[in-house]
Length: 168
Image (tube, rainbow, N blue to C red):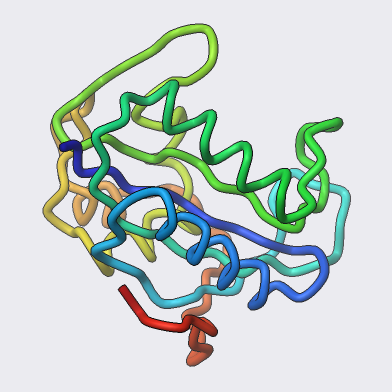
């Protein structure tokens, strides 16, 4: 089993419902063992005024990165995500951030997620649930990456709770 961390984001429609449904769908395909708080952020490099809700989910899965990515893309499509244009508003975005202890790259997926160390909106919730997880290429903890992150965009932790039937 691999320990994996996923980044979830939504800035279109009912953002809370989109995240809640995504987590429920992820729970249907694998073991969810950690869920961060929800953070609100402005879109970066995107022509949209819609604020994002972002979070990180920790899972355990037997699936390798390409197979997991295929399953996550199915969830995104089921929840209304269209992959026509990069950097457009989305109902849901699910990214594979890190497979603990594994670096992997092929024509479909790259793990750890490229640019992870430069994205405060990912590092804040990631550090909340796994501060000691190590980026296998940089050999630094998530907490260290967050402390040294040059991204100055605002990341606001919310008090909003997911609408889940059962937390895990």
